[in-house]
Length: 435
Ligand SMILES: *Cc1c(COP(=O)(O)O)cnc(C)c1O
View (tube, helix red, strand yellow):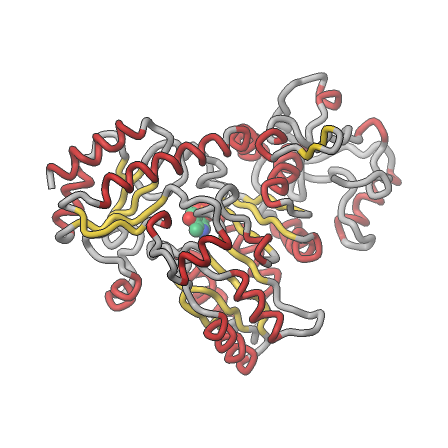
């Protein structure tokens, strides 16, 4: 929260009361703080819940306040805006959302966006310049790969990648190759990779980056934590500078909104905030309000989905019609991936890969015979979803790359929801019988 000095430009009548984060020496948890943190009912006629602020602009109390706020918005004075100015920059619902988003990773700053992709695009546009090289883990979310390779490519920005499970030496070699090519402006990670589920060793990336850039001018490390965050992985703890979220997935959690978020240190997010102010990629007040509601049950929903996934995967693993299950709970003891998992994750998530015996025919028969699970792409919602990546999300991926990524015709991607686990097992058992 902003301290008094930072808030000095805001008239006392508009200053929200600071929300307590401690009782005595007891630190309150994010799941508790999600109910009220960052919202002061006295500023909204005593309303228990934050109203939706549908307004495009905000009235200044005096001209001097207006000037001071603009000094903050334009960066003439450090510290950012002290008051609300115009809804392309920020609004009360988005500010409360950002205050709460920070709590899950104990981050200094958070920014809300209109989609996961607009968060990623705003991040890339802020850091990458013509002639620069972006180093990234592979594979990435398809639209992110398109944005980096095809769209930024048109502006003279190039990229080099390393496979998600790479060792520190392998990562260091790619960073050296990038430095030889141009200015390395950003290291962009996604973990676990989809659909391989390979985890990126963020600590190794950090060590390799710091060794290659001993000075102050280090390229930031950003990581897409959509699949495990913010509950099961907190990459800022392993040395990432910026965590990226598609809030459409677990954070939104009800498959009824599209939004994105970035969290991290102020010094990395301030230039991104300036870019967002300029291009207007912030989420709207209604979406921010829906996310506030969603965040109240985030821990409950993710915990239940994670427990369900563990039960469902235990059932699927030994089924005679199943070839294998790619689930983070089944990593081979003593393997490098299991070591990364132990250092980086507190849960195996609820999204996994199911490889059936057979090919497309078997995968389609399975999908067409599901009753509870819906046949749809996306993940992290209250309802269970299943899809066939080779025929759907990754249809346009060239065959050899599909093979390298394990995107075979017998692959079904499943995101488990919060239904009763026995009902889900009955659904999968019934669909497998029909294969
Ligand atoms: C869905 C997703 C995105 C894109 O998010 P949108 O909210 O759909 O724009 C980015 N990364 C990952 C890992 C995703 O699953």
